[in-house]
Amino acid sequence: MPTYLLRRVGQSLLAIFLTLTTVFLLVRLAPGDPAAAYAAPTASSAELDRIRAQFGLDEPLINQYGIFLRDLFTGNLGTSYSFHAPAFDVVMDRMPYTITLAVAAITVTTVVAVPLGVWMARRADTKRELGANVLTITGQSMPDFWTGVMLLTLFAVLLPVLPASGFTTWSGLVLPTVTVAVLQLALVSRLVRREMVTALAAPYTTIARSRGVSERALTWSYGLRNSAVPLVTALGTRFAALLNGVVVVEVVFGWPGVGSLVVRALATRDYPLIQATVLVTATLAILVQLLVDLAYPLLDPRVRLGKAA
Amino acid sequence: MTGTVVGPERPSAVTARDLARATATRQRRGARFKIWAGALCTALVVLPVALAGLLPLPDANAQDLSQRRLPPLSGGHLFGTDQLGRDLLSRILHGGQVSLSVGVLAVLVSGLIGMAAGAAAGFFGGWVDALVSRFLEAQLALPLLMMLLLVVALFGPSITVITCVIAVAQWPEVARLTRSLVLVEREKPYVAAARVLGLRGWTVLARHVVPNVVRPVSLVVLLLIAQAVLLESALSFLGAGPQRPFATWGRIISDGQAYITTSWWLVTLPGLVIALLVVGVNLLGDGLRDRTRRRKGARA
Image 1 (cartoon, chains in turn green, yellow):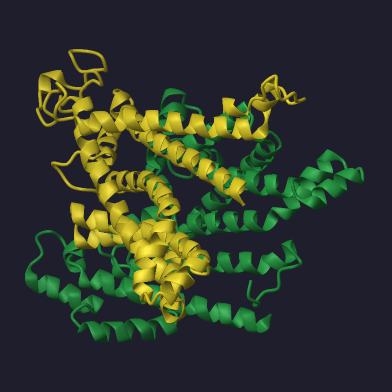
Image 2 (tube, rainbow over the protein chains, first blue to last red; image 1 turned 180 degrees about the vertical axis):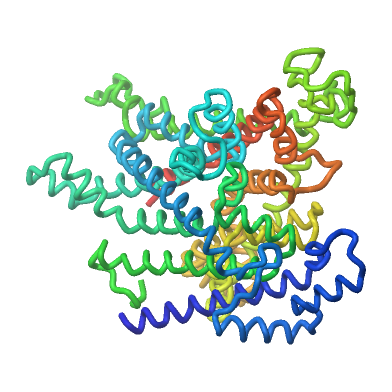
Protein backbone atom coordinates (compact mmCIF):
# COMPACT_ATOMS: atom_id res chain seq x y z
CA MET A 1 0.00 0.00 0.00
CA PRO A 2 2.66 2.64 0.89
CA THR A 3 4.68 1.58 -2.17
CA TYR A 4 1.58 1.88 -4.30
CA LEU A 5 0.88 5.35 -2.93
CA LEU A 6 4.49 6.44 -3.47
CA ARG A 7 4.50 5.19 -7.04
CA ARG A 8 1.19 6.88 -7.81
CA VAL A 9 2.33 10.20 -6.32
CA GLY A 10 5.62 9.93 -8.23
CA GLN A 11 3.77 9.32 -11.50
CA SER A 12 1.42 12.21 -10.78
CA LEU A 13 4.28 14.60 -10.07
CA LEU A 14 5.94 13.54 -13.32
CA ALA A 15 2.70 14.10 -15.24
CA ILE A 16 2.26 17.58 -13.74
CA PHE A 17 5.87 18.45 -14.47
CA LEU A 18 5.59 17.34 -18.12
CA THR A 19 2.32 19.24 -18.52
CA LEU A 20 3.91 22.41 -17.17
CA THR A 21 6.91 22.04 -19.47
CA THR A 22 4.62 21.54 -22.48
CA VAL A 23 2.63 24.65 -21.59
CA PHE A 24 5.81 26.62 -20.96
CA LEU A 25 7.14 25.76 -24.41
CA LEU A 26 3.79 26.17 -26.21
CA VAL A 27 3.13 29.68 -24.97
CA ARG A 28 6.64 30.84 -25.81
CA LEU A 29 7.00 29.18 -29.20
CA ALA A 30 3.76 30.61 -30.50
CA PRO A 31 3.35 34.06 -31.97
CA GLY A 32 2.03 36.84 -29.75
CA ASP A 33 3.92 39.24 -27.51
CA PRO A 34 2.99 39.75 -23.86
CA ALA A 35 4.77 43.09 -23.85
CA ALA A 36 2.56 44.37 -26.68
CA ALA A 37 -0.53 43.19 -24.84
CA TYR A 38 0.71 44.78 -21.61
CA ALA A 39 1.89 48.16 -22.87
CA ALA A 40 -0.22 51.00 -24.19
CA PRO A 41 -0.91 50.73 -27.94
CA THR A 42 1.28 53.78 -28.52
CA ALA A 43 4.31 52.33 -26.72
CA SER A 44 7.63 52.83 -28.46
CA SER A 45 9.86 49.85 -29.23
CA ALA A 46 12.29 50.99 -26.52
CA GLU A 47 9.46 50.85 -24.04
CA LEU A 48 8.49 47.36 -25.23
CA ASP A 49 12.11 46.25 -24.78
CA ARG A 50 12.09 47.63 -21.26
CA ILE A 51 8.90 45.69 -20.42
CA ARG A 52 10.35 42.51 -21.91
CA ALA A 53 13.47 42.94 -19.77
CA GLN A 54 11.29 43.54 -16.72
CA PHE A 55 9.39 40.27 -17.34
CA GLY A 56 12.62 38.45 -18.11
CA LEU A 57 11.46 37.72 -21.65
CA ASP A 58 14.67 39.02 -23.22
CA GLU A 59 16.60 36.01 -21.94
CA PRO A 60 17.21 32.99 -24.19
CA LEU A 61 14.48 30.36 -23.93
CA ILE A 62 16.70 27.90 -22.07
CA ASN A 63 17.57 30.49 -19.43
CA GLN A 64 13.90 31.39 -19.03
CA TYR A 65 13.18 27.70 -18.49
CA GLY A 66 15.96 27.46 -15.91
CA ILE A 67 14.58 30.45 -14.03
CA PHE A 68 11.07 28.98 -14.27
CA LEU A 69 12.24 25.67 -12.77
CA ARG A 70 14.23 27.36 -10.01
CA ASP A 71 11.23 29.51 -9.08
CA LEU A 72 8.92 26.51 -9.26
CA PHE A 73 10.92 24.60 -6.66
CA THR A 74 11.06 27.60 -4.36
CA GLY A 75 7.29 27.91 -4.65
CA ASN A 76 7.30 31.07 -6.73
CA LEU A 77 5.10 31.02 -9.83
CA GLY A 78 5.91 34.53 -10.94
CA THR A 79 3.87 37.71 -11.05
CA SER A 80 0.84 37.98 -13.26
CA TYR A 81 1.39 40.64 -15.94
CA SER A 82 -2.20 41.86 -15.99
CA PHE A 83 -3.10 41.56 -12.30
CA HIS A 84 0.24 42.83 -10.94
CA ALA A 85 -0.05 40.20 -8.21
CA PRO A 86 1.54 36.81 -7.58
CA ALA A 87 0.00 34.49 -10.20
CA PHE A 88 -0.59 31.75 -7.65
CA ASP A 89 -2.63 34.11 -5.44
CA VAL A 90 -4.71 35.26 -8.43
CA VAL A 91 -5.58 31.63 -9.27
CA MET A 92 -6.27 30.79 -5.62
CA ASP A 93 -8.66 33.76 -5.38
CA ARG A 94 -10.72 32.23 -8.20
CA MET A 95 -10.46 28.62 -7.08
CA PRO A 96 -13.24 28.69 -4.41
CA TYR A 97 -15.76 29.72 -7.08
CA THR A 98 -14.79 26.92 -9.42
CA ILE A 99 -14.83 24.41 -6.55
CA THR A 100 -18.26 25.64 -5.42
CA LEU A 101 -19.70 25.24 -8.91
CA ALA A 102 -18.07 21.82 -9.39
CA VAL A 103 -19.33 20.52 -6.02
CA ALA A 104 -22.84 21.85 -6.65
CA ALA A 105 -22.97 20.40 -10.16
CA ILE A 106 -21.70 16.97 -9.15
CA THR A 107 -24.11 16.89 -6.18
CA VAL A 108 -27.12 17.72 -8.35
CA THR A 109 -25.99 15.18 -10.95
CA THR A 110 -25.68 12.45 -8.32
CA VAL A 111 -28.97 13.25 -6.60
CA VAL A 112 -30.90 13.19 -9.89
CA ALA A 113 -29.02 10.66 -12.00
CA VAL A 114 -28.60 7.83 -9.48
CA PRO A 115 -32.33 7.44 -8.60
CA LEU A 116 -33.14 7.94 -12.30
CA GLY A 117 -30.72 5.18 -13.28
CA VAL A 118 -32.16 2.89 -10.61
CA TRP A 119 -35.68 3.62 -11.87
CA MET A 120 -34.57 2.94 -15.45
CA ALA A 121 -33.04 -0.38 -14.43
CA ARG A 122 -36.23 -1.50 -12.68
CA ARG A 123 -38.32 -0.48 -15.70
CA ALA A 124 -35.75 -1.67 -18.23
CA ASP A 125 -36.98 -1.78 -21.84
CA THR A 126 -40.38 -0.23 -21.25
CA LYS A 127 -41.71 2.72 -23.20
CA ARG A 128 -41.29 5.00 -20.20
CA GLU A 129 -37.66 4.01 -19.81
CA LEU A 130 -37.09 4.70 -23.50
CA GLY A 131 -38.67 8.12 -22.99
CA ALA A 132 -36.36 8.90 -20.05
CA ASN A 133 -33.42 7.66 -22.10
CA VAL A 134 -34.25 9.91 -25.06
CA LEU A 135 -34.77 12.84 -22.68
CA THR A 136 -31.34 12.50 -21.04
CA ILE A 137 -29.67 12.04 -24.43
CA THR A 138 -31.32 15.28 -25.53
CA GLY A 139 -29.91 17.03 -22.47
CA GLN A 140 -26.46 15.71 -23.28
CA SER A 141 -26.76 16.82 -26.91
CA MET A 142 -27.52 20.48 -26.35
CA PRO A 143 -24.47 22.74 -26.61
CA ASP A 144 -23.71 23.90 -23.07
CA PHE A 145 -23.31 27.55 -24.00
CA TRP A 146 -26.70 27.48 -25.73
CA THR A 147 -28.44 25.80 -22.78
CA GLY A 148 -26.84 28.45 -20.59
CA VAL A 149 -28.01 31.36 -22.71
CA MET A 150 -31.52 29.87 -22.96
CA LEU A 151 -31.83 29.37 -19.18
CA LEU A 152 -30.45 32.84 -18.66
CA THR A 153 -33.03 34.38 -20.95
CA LEU A 154 -35.88 32.40 -19.46
CA PHE A 155 -35.15 32.75 -15.76
CA ALA A 156 -33.19 35.96 -15.53
CA VAL A 157 -34.63 38.15 -18.28
CA LEU A 158 -38.18 37.06 -19.16
CA LEU A 159 -39.02 35.80 -15.65
CA PRO A 160 -36.57 37.71 -13.50
CA VAL A 161 -36.41 35.27 -10.60
CA LEU A 162 -32.69 34.49 -10.63
CA PRO A 163 -29.62 36.67 -11.04
CA ALA A 164 -28.11 36.69 -14.53
CA SER A 165 -24.43 36.62 -13.78
CA GLY A 166 -21.72 36.63 -11.20
CA PHE A 167 -21.85 35.13 -7.74
CA THR A 168 -23.25 37.62 -5.28
CA THR A 169 -26.00 35.51 -3.73
CA TRP A 170 -26.45 31.76 -3.52
CA SER A 171 -29.29 31.92 -6.03
CA GLY A 172 -26.66 32.84 -8.62
CA LEU A 173 -25.44 29.28 -8.33
CA VAL A 174 -28.68 27.74 -9.62
CA LEU A 175 -28.48 28.38 -13.36
CA PRO A 176 -24.80 27.46 -13.90
CA THR A 177 -25.28 24.30 -11.82
CA VAL A 178 -28.32 23.21 -13.83
CA THR A 179 -26.51 23.90 -17.10
CA VAL A 180 -23.57 21.73 -16.10
CA ALA A 181 -25.71 18.99 -14.54
CA VAL A 182 -27.94 18.58 -17.62
CA LEU A 183 -24.84 17.57 -19.59
CA GLN A 184 -23.83 14.86 -17.12
CA LEU A 185 -27.23 13.26 -16.48
CA ALA A 186 -27.27 10.95 -19.51
CA LEU A 187 -23.80 9.57 -18.84
CA VAL A 188 -24.32 8.83 -15.14
CA SER A 189 -27.91 7.58 -15.33
CA ARG A 190 -27.05 5.21 -18.16
CA LEU A 191 -24.06 3.88 -16.24
CA VAL A 192 -26.20 3.25 -13.15
CA ARG A 193 -28.87 1.56 -15.29
CA ARG A 194 -26.36 -0.76 -16.98
CA GLU A 195 -24.64 -1.75 -13.72
CA MET A 196 -27.95 -2.23 -11.93
CA VAL A 197 -29.42 -4.44 -14.66
CA THR A 198 -26.33 -6.65 -14.44
CA ALA A 199 -26.45 -6.74 -10.65
CA LEU A 200 -30.18 -7.48 -10.47
CA ALA A 201 -29.76 -10.39 -12.88
CA ALA A 202 -26.81 -11.85 -10.96
CA PRO A 203 -27.20 -15.15 -9.07
CA TYR A 204 -26.58 -13.50 -5.68
CA THR A 205 -29.68 -11.35 -6.23
CA THR A 206 -31.81 -14.37 -7.09
CA ILE A 207 -30.60 -16.14 -3.97
CA ALA A 208 -31.23 -13.10 -1.80
CA ARG A 209 -34.72 -12.80 -3.25
CA SER A 210 -35.41 -16.46 -2.55
CA ARG A 211 -34.31 -15.88 1.05
CA GLY A 212 -37.00 -13.23 1.30
CA VAL A 213 -34.92 -10.05 1.09
CA SER A 214 -37.23 -7.16 0.27
CA GLU A 215 -37.17 -5.58 -3.19
CA ARG A 216 -36.11 -2.30 -1.64
CA ALA A 217 -33.09 -3.87 0.03
CA LEU A 218 -32.33 -5.76 -3.19
CA THR A 219 -32.25 -2.50 -5.13
CA TRP A 220 -30.25 -0.36 -2.77
CA SER A 221 -28.04 -2.70 -0.73
CA TYR A 222 -27.46 -5.37 -3.35
CA GLY A 223 -27.78 -3.66 -6.72
CA LEU A 224 -26.46 -0.19 -6.04
CA ARG A 225 -23.83 -1.37 -3.58
CA ASN A 226 -22.34 -3.59 -6.26
CA SER A 227 -22.46 -0.78 -8.81
CA ALA A 228 -20.49 1.52 -6.53
CA VAL A 229 -17.02 1.14 -8.06
CA PRO A 230 -17.86 2.13 -11.65
CA LEU A 231 -20.24 4.82 -10.37
CA VAL A 232 -17.63 6.44 -8.15
CA THR A 233 -15.08 6.20 -10.97
CA ALA A 234 -17.40 8.02 -13.36
CA LEU A 235 -18.38 10.68 -10.82
CA GLY A 236 -14.73 11.18 -9.86
CA THR A 237 -13.66 11.61 -13.46
CA ARG A 238 -16.48 14.07 -14.10
CA PHE A 239 -15.63 15.99 -10.93
CA ALA A 240 -11.96 16.21 -11.90
CA ALA A 241 -12.97 17.50 -15.32
CA LEU A 242 -15.22 20.14 -13.73
CA LEU A 243 -12.38 21.32 -11.50
CA ASN A 244 -10.36 22.01 -14.61
CA GLY A 245 -12.81 24.80 -15.17
CA VAL A 246 -16.12 24.74 -16.95
CA VAL A 247 -14.79 27.37 -19.32
CA VAL A 248 -17.88 27.84 -21.46
CA VAL A 249 -20.42 27.92 -18.65
CA GLU A 250 -18.25 30.27 -16.62
CA VAL A 251 -18.00 32.67 -19.55
CA VAL A 252 -21.78 32.59 -20.21
CA PHE A 253 -22.71 33.30 -16.60
CA GLY A 254 -19.84 35.66 -15.81
CA TRP A 255 -18.77 33.20 -13.13
CA PRO A 256 -15.52 34.38 -11.51
CA GLY A 257 -13.82 30.96 -11.62
CA VAL A 258 -10.60 29.75 -13.21
CA GLY A 259 -12.32 28.99 -16.52
CA SER A 260 -13.06 32.62 -17.28
CA LEU A 261 -9.67 33.53 -15.82
CA VAL A 262 -7.84 31.34 -18.32
CA VAL A 263 -9.69 32.89 -21.25
CA ARG A 264 -8.48 36.29 -20.09
CA ALA A 265 -4.94 35.07 -19.41
CA LEU A 266 -4.72 33.62 -22.92
CA ALA A 267 -5.97 36.83 -24.51
CA THR A 268 -3.33 38.92 -22.73
CA ARG A 269 -0.53 36.33 -23.13
CA ASP A 270 -0.13 36.35 -19.35
CA TYR A 271 2.51 33.57 -19.23
CA PRO A 272 2.86 33.25 -15.42
CA LEU A 273 -0.90 33.24 -14.97
CA ILE A 274 -1.41 30.55 -17.65
CA GLN A 275 1.27 28.39 -16.02
CA ALA A 276 -0.12 28.89 -12.52
CA THR A 277 -3.65 28.00 -13.67
CA VAL A 278 -2.48 24.83 -15.37
CA LEU A 279 -0.40 23.85 -12.33
CA VAL A 280 -3.23 24.33 -9.84
CA THR A 281 -6.01 22.74 -11.90
CA ALA A 282 -3.93 19.78 -13.06
CA THR A 283 -2.79 19.12 -9.47
CA LEU A 284 -6.35 19.22 -8.16
CA ALA A 285 -7.67 16.97 -10.93
CA ILE A 286 -4.92 14.40 -10.36
CA LEU A 287 -5.53 14.56 -6.61
CA VAL A 288 -9.21 13.77 -7.09
CA GLN A 289 -8.33 10.81 -9.32
CA LEU A 290 -5.93 9.55 -6.66
CA LEU A 291 -8.61 9.80 -3.96
CA VAL A 292 -11.03 7.87 -6.16
CA ASP A 293 -8.46 5.11 -6.62
CA LEU A 294 -7.82 5.00 -2.89
CA ALA A 295 -11.57 4.67 -2.25
CA TYR A 296 -11.87 1.43 -4.26
CA PRO A 297 -10.88 -0.96 -1.41
CA LEU A 298 -13.46 0.73 0.83
CA LEU A 299 -16.19 0.28 -1.77
CA ASP A 300 -15.23 -3.23 -2.78
CA PRO A 301 -13.09 -5.22 -0.32
CA ARG A 302 -12.05 -7.54 -3.14
CA VAL A 303 -9.95 -4.77 -4.66
CA ARG A 304 -6.31 -4.77 -3.61
CA LEU A 305 -4.42 -1.69 -4.68
CA GLY A 306 -1.14 -2.15 -6.47
CA LYS A 307 -1.97 -5.65 -7.70
CA ALA A 308 -2.68 -6.29 -11.33
CA ALA A 309 -6.38 -6.10 -11.99
CA MET B 1 -40.12 -11.83 -36.49
CA THR B 2 -43.35 -13.39 -37.70
CA GLY B 3 -41.43 -16.56 -38.54
CA THR B 4 -41.22 -17.45 -34.86
CA VAL B 5 -44.96 -17.23 -34.28
CA VAL B 6 -46.21 -20.76 -33.82
CA GLY B 7 -48.83 -22.10 -36.20
CA PRO B 8 -51.69 -24.47 -35.36
CA GLU B 9 -49.61 -27.49 -36.35
CA ARG B 10 -47.25 -26.85 -33.40
CA PRO B 11 -49.37 -26.01 -30.38
CA SER B 12 -47.65 -23.99 -27.71
CA ALA B 13 -48.56 -22.09 -24.57
CA VAL B 14 -46.57 -19.13 -25.91
CA THR B 15 -49.03 -16.80 -27.58
CA ALA B 16 -48.25 -14.06 -30.07
CA ARG B 17 -49.08 -11.61 -27.30
CA ASP B 18 -46.40 -13.12 -25.04
CA LEU B 19 -43.87 -12.79 -27.82
CA ALA B 20 -44.81 -9.16 -28.38
CA ARG B 21 -44.26 -8.44 -24.71
CA ALA B 22 -41.04 -10.39 -24.33
CA THR B 23 -37.93 -8.50 -23.22
CA ALA B 24 -36.09 -9.29 -26.45
CA THR B 25 -38.95 -7.88 -28.54
CA ARG B 26 -39.13 -4.74 -26.45
CA GLN B 27 -35.36 -4.26 -26.63
CA ARG B 28 -35.46 -4.68 -30.39
CA ARG B 29 -38.34 -2.20 -30.62
CA GLY B 30 -36.46 0.32 -28.47
CA ALA B 31 -33.32 0.01 -30.59
CA ARG B 32 -35.33 0.32 -33.80
CA PHE B 33 -37.11 3.42 -32.51
CA LYS B 34 -33.78 5.03 -31.63
CA ILE B 35 -32.26 4.20 -35.02
CA TRP B 36 -35.22 5.58 -36.97
CA ALA B 37 -35.70 8.68 -34.83
CA GLY B 38 -31.96 9.32 -34.89
CA ALA B 39 -31.68 8.88 -38.64
CA LEU B 40 -34.66 11.20 -39.14
CA CYS B 41 -33.23 13.99 -36.94
CA THR B 42 -29.81 13.66 -38.57
CA ALA B 43 -31.25 13.75 -42.08
CA LEU B 44 -33.40 16.77 -41.21
CA VAL B 45 -30.22 18.73 -40.56
CA VAL B 46 -27.66 17.12 -42.84
CA LEU B 47 -29.67 17.08 -46.07
CA PRO B 48 -30.55 20.81 -46.11
CA VAL B 49 -26.97 21.66 -45.10
CA ALA B 50 -25.55 19.52 -47.90
CA LEU B 51 -27.98 20.98 -50.43
CA ALA B 52 -27.67 24.57 -49.17
CA GLY B 53 -26.22 25.69 -52.51
CA LEU B 54 -29.14 24.26 -54.50
CA LEU B 55 -32.00 25.50 -52.33
CA PRO B 56 -33.72 28.76 -53.33
CA LEU B 57 -32.22 30.78 -50.48
CA PRO B 58 -30.96 34.35 -50.30
CA ASP B 59 -27.18 34.75 -50.25
CA ALA B 60 -25.84 34.03 -46.74
CA ASN B 61 -23.75 37.21 -46.75
CA ALA B 62 -26.16 39.58 -48.53
CA GLN B 63 -26.85 42.37 -46.06
CA ASP B 64 -29.97 44.50 -46.13
CA LEU B 65 -30.07 46.93 -43.24
CA SER B 66 -33.70 47.83 -43.92
CA GLN B 67 -34.61 44.17 -43.27
CA ARG B 68 -32.81 43.95 -39.93
CA ARG B 69 -33.88 41.42 -37.25
CA LEU B 70 -37.12 40.35 -38.89
CA PRO B 71 -38.87 37.65 -36.88
CA PRO B 72 -39.20 34.16 -38.39
CA LEU B 73 -41.79 33.58 -41.13
CA SER B 74 -41.83 37.19 -42.24
CA GLY B 75 -40.72 38.88 -45.45
CA GLY B 76 -39.85 35.59 -47.12
CA HIS B 77 -37.36 34.66 -44.41
CA LEU B 78 -38.30 31.33 -42.87
CA PHE B 79 -35.98 31.76 -39.86
CA GLY B 80 -36.05 35.58 -39.92
CA THR B 81 -33.01 37.80 -40.40
CA ASP B 82 -30.06 38.74 -38.22
CA GLN B 83 -28.71 42.05 -36.97
CA LEU B 84 -27.35 42.92 -40.43
CA GLY B 85 -30.44 41.83 -42.34
CA ARG B 86 -28.94 38.54 -43.53
CA ASP B 87 -31.22 35.54 -43.96
CA LEU B 88 -30.75 33.40 -40.84
CA LEU B 89 -31.71 30.07 -42.43
CA SER B 90 -29.23 30.58 -45.23
CA ARG B 91 -26.51 31.50 -42.72
CA ILE B 92 -27.25 28.46 -40.59
CA LEU B 93 -27.14 26.10 -43.59
CA HIS B 94 -23.98 27.56 -45.07
CA GLY B 95 -22.36 27.78 -41.64
CA GLY B 96 -23.35 24.16 -41.12
CA GLN B 97 -21.25 23.18 -44.11
CA VAL B 98 -18.17 24.52 -42.31
CA SER B 99 -19.15 23.08 -38.92
CA LEU B 100 -19.97 19.68 -40.37
CA SER B 101 -16.89 19.42 -42.57
CA VAL B 102 -14.66 20.37 -39.65
CA GLY B 103 -16.40 17.74 -37.54
CA VAL B 104 -16.21 14.97 -40.14
CA LEU B 105 -12.60 15.75 -41.09
CA ALA B 106 -11.53 15.90 -37.44
CA VAL B 107 -13.18 12.58 -36.73
CA LEU B 108 -11.58 10.96 -39.77
CA VAL B 109 -8.15 12.13 -38.62
CA SER B 110 -8.70 11.10 -35.00
CA GLY B 111 -10.22 7.80 -36.13
CA LEU B 112 -7.17 6.99 -38.26
CA ILE B 113 -4.64 8.02 -35.60
CA GLY B 114 -6.61 6.32 -32.85
CA MET B 115 -7.04 3.08 -34.77
CA ALA B 116 -3.42 2.92 -35.85
CA ALA B 117 -2.06 3.68 -32.38
CA GLY B 118 -4.58 1.53 -30.54
CA ALA B 119 -4.18 -1.44 -32.89
CA ALA B 120 -0.38 -1.28 -32.73
CA ALA B 121 -0.47 -1.00 -28.93
CA GLY B 122 -2.85 -3.91 -28.54
CA PHE B 123 -1.21 -6.16 -31.11
CA PHE B 124 2.49 -5.68 -30.44
CA GLY B 125 2.35 -4.91 -26.72
CA GLY B 126 5.70 -4.23 -25.05
CA TRP B 127 7.18 -0.78 -25.44
CA VAL B 128 4.68 0.26 -28.14
CA ASP B 129 1.85 -0.41 -25.72
CA ALA B 130 3.63 1.35 -22.86
CA LEU B 131 4.27 4.43 -25.01
CA VAL B 132 0.69 4.69 -26.32
CA SER B 133 -0.85 4.01 -22.93
CA ARG B 134 1.25 6.65 -21.18
CA PHE B 135 0.25 9.16 -23.86
CA LEU B 136 -3.41 8.31 -23.32
CA GLU B 137 -3.13 8.73 -19.55
CA ALA B 138 -1.25 12.00 -19.86
CA GLN B 139 -3.89 13.45 -22.14
CA LEU B 140 -6.73 12.37 -19.88
CA ALA B 141 -5.11 14.29 -17.01
CA LEU B 142 -4.93 17.51 -19.03
CA PRO B 143 -7.57 20.21 -18.84
CA LEU B 144 -8.96 19.59 -22.32
CA LEU B 145 -10.81 22.74 -23.34
CA MET B 146 -8.14 24.90 -21.71
CA MET B 147 -5.45 23.22 -23.79
CA LEU B 148 -7.53 23.53 -26.97
CA LEU B 149 -8.06 27.24 -26.33
CA LEU B 150 -4.35 27.60 -25.66
CA VAL B 151 -3.36 25.94 -28.94
CA VAL B 152 -5.93 27.88 -30.96
CA ALA B 153 -4.96 31.16 -29.30
CA LEU B 154 -1.34 30.42 -30.10
CA PHE B 155 -1.47 29.04 -33.61
CA GLY B 156 -4.36 31.05 -34.95
CA PRO B 157 -7.93 29.96 -35.57
CA SER B 158 -7.54 28.56 -39.09
CA ILE B 159 -9.73 25.66 -40.17
CA THR B 160 -6.70 23.36 -40.31
CA VAL B 161 -5.63 24.17 -36.75
CA ILE B 162 -9.15 23.70 -35.41
CA THR B 163 -9.61 20.41 -37.22
CA CYS B 164 -6.29 19.12 -35.87
CA VAL B 165 -7.06 20.36 -32.36
CA ILE B 166 -10.39 18.51 -32.29
CA ALA B 167 -8.76 15.40 -33.75
CA VAL B 168 -6.06 15.47 -31.08
CA ALA B 169 -8.73 15.90 -28.42
CA GLN B 170 -10.62 12.84 -29.61
CA TRP B 171 -8.05 10.22 -30.57
CA PRO B 172 -7.69 8.71 -27.07
CA GLU B 173 -11.28 7.47 -27.12
CA VAL B 174 -10.74 5.57 -30.40
CA ALA B 175 -7.31 4.34 -29.39
CA ARG B 176 -8.48 2.90 -26.07
CA LEU B 177 -11.37 1.04 -27.64
CA THR B 178 -9.29 -0.32 -30.53
CA ARG B 179 -6.57 -1.44 -28.15
CA SER B 180 -8.98 -3.36 -25.93
CA LEU B 181 -10.66 -5.02 -28.94
CA VAL B 182 -7.35 -5.97 -30.55
CA LEU B 183 -6.13 -7.45 -27.25
CA VAL B 184 -9.02 -9.93 -27.44
CA GLU B 185 -8.76 -10.48 -31.18
CA ARG B 186 -5.04 -11.31 -31.30
CA GLU B 187 -5.51 -14.38 -29.09
CA LYS B 188 -7.92 -15.97 -31.55
CA PRO B 189 -6.86 -19.01 -33.59
CA TYR B 190 -7.04 -17.28 -36.97
CA VAL B 191 -4.20 -14.98 -35.95
CA ALA B 192 -2.04 -17.94 -35.01
CA ALA B 193 -3.04 -19.59 -38.33
CA ALA B 194 -2.03 -16.48 -40.27
CA ARG B 195 1.31 -16.45 -38.47
CA VAL B 196 1.88 -20.13 -39.21
CA LEU B 197 1.27 -19.33 -42.86
CA GLY B 198 4.28 -17.04 -42.57
CA LEU B 199 2.60 -13.61 -42.65
CA ARG B 200 4.43 -10.79 -40.93
CA GLY B 201 3.03 -9.05 -37.85
CA TRP B 202 2.00 -5.93 -39.74
CA THR B 203 0.25 -7.90 -42.46
CA VAL B 204 -1.67 -9.99 -39.96
CA LEU B 205 -2.70 -6.82 -38.14
CA ALA B 206 -3.77 -4.87 -41.21
CA ARG B 207 -5.32 -7.64 -43.28
CA HIS B 208 -6.88 -9.87 -40.63
CA VAL B 209 -7.22 -8.21 -37.23
CA VAL B 210 -8.22 -4.65 -38.11
CA PRO B 211 -11.13 -5.66 -40.41
CA ASN B 212 -12.60 -7.56 -37.47
CA VAL B 213 -12.61 -4.56 -35.14
CA VAL B 214 -13.59 -1.87 -37.66
CA ARG B 215 -17.32 -2.20 -37.03
CA PRO B 216 -17.48 -1.43 -33.30
CA VAL B 217 -14.83 1.25 -33.70
CA SER B 218 -16.72 2.99 -36.49
CA LEU B 219 -19.75 3.17 -34.19
CA VAL B 220 -17.77 5.14 -31.64
CA VAL B 221 -16.40 7.30 -34.43
CA LEU B 222 -19.99 8.10 -35.44
CA LEU B 223 -20.73 9.25 -31.88
CA LEU B 224 -17.55 11.32 -31.92
CA ILE B 225 -18.85 13.34 -34.90
CA ALA B 226 -21.55 14.71 -32.59
CA GLN B 227 -18.90 15.57 -29.98
CA ALA B 228 -16.73 17.23 -32.63
CA VAL B 229 -19.61 19.45 -33.79
CA LEU B 230 -20.28 20.45 -30.18
CA LEU B 231 -16.60 21.13 -29.52
CA GLU B 232 -16.26 23.23 -32.66
CA SER B 233 -19.30 25.29 -31.78
CA ALA B 234 -18.02 25.80 -28.22
CA LEU B 235 -14.67 27.01 -29.59
CA SER B 236 -16.48 29.33 -32.01
CA PHE B 237 -18.62 30.62 -29.18
CA LEU B 238 -15.49 31.52 -27.20
CA GLY B 239 -14.14 33.32 -30.26
CA ALA B 240 -11.60 30.62 -31.09
CA GLY B 241 -13.44 29.14 -34.07
CA PRO B 242 -12.89 29.60 -37.79
CA GLN B 243 -12.81 33.32 -38.47
CA ARG B 244 -15.01 35.38 -40.79
CA PRO B 245 -16.31 35.06 -43.45
CA PHE B 246 -17.16 31.57 -42.11
CA ALA B 247 -20.42 31.76 -40.21
CA THR B 248 -20.12 28.65 -38.08
CA TRP B 249 -22.90 27.69 -35.71
CA GLY B 250 -21.13 28.74 -32.53
CA ARG B 251 -20.28 32.13 -34.03
CA ILE B 252 -23.86 32.80 -35.16
CA ILE B 253 -24.98 32.12 -31.58
CA SER B 254 -22.32 34.25 -29.92
CA ASP B 255 -23.04 37.10 -32.39
CA GLY B 256 -26.76 36.87 -31.68
CA GLN B 257 -26.30 36.82 -27.91
CA ALA B 258 -26.29 40.61 -27.69
CA TYR B 259 -29.82 40.70 -29.14
CA ILE B 260 -31.27 37.87 -27.06
CA THR B 261 -33.87 39.98 -25.26
CA THR B 262 -35.29 41.56 -28.42
CA SER B 263 -34.65 38.90 -31.07
CA TRP B 264 -34.94 35.46 -29.49
CA TRP B 265 -34.60 33.60 -32.80
CA LEU B 266 -30.99 34.65 -33.41
CA VAL B 267 -29.79 32.36 -30.62
CA THR B 268 -32.64 29.89 -30.24
CA LEU B 269 -32.88 28.61 -33.81
CA PRO B 270 -29.19 27.88 -34.50
CA GLY B 271 -28.98 26.17 -31.10
CA LEU B 272 -31.99 24.03 -31.93
CA VAL B 273 -30.37 23.01 -35.22
CA ILE B 274 -27.17 21.93 -33.42
CA ALA B 275 -29.18 20.09 -30.76
CA LEU B 276 -31.32 18.34 -33.40
CA LEU B 277 -28.24 17.11 -35.26
CA VAL B 278 -26.41 15.97 -32.13
CA VAL B 279 -29.52 14.28 -30.69
CA GLY B 280 -29.96 12.52 -34.03
CA VAL B 281 -26.40 11.25 -34.19
CA ASN B 282 -26.42 10.22 -30.52
CA LEU B 283 -29.72 8.33 -30.85
CA LEU B 284 -28.57 6.64 -34.05
CA GLY B 285 -25.28 5.56 -32.50
CA ASP B 286 -27.01 4.43 -29.32
CA GLY B 287 -29.58 2.38 -31.22
CA LEU B 288 -26.94 0.74 -33.39
CA ARG B 289 -24.89 -0.05 -30.29
CA ASP B 290 -27.88 -1.59 -28.52
CA ARG B 291 -28.49 -3.76 -31.56
CA THR B 292 -24.92 -5.03 -31.92
CA ARG B 293 -24.63 -5.60 -28.18
CA ARG B 294 -27.76 -7.74 -28.20
CA ARG B 295 -26.54 -9.75 -31.20
CA LYS B 296 -23.26 -10.36 -29.49
CA GLY B 297 -25.09 -11.41 -26.34
CA ALA B 298 -27.20 -13.86 -28.33
CA ARG B 299 -24.16 -15.41 -29.94
CA ALA B 300 -22.21 -15.88 -26.73
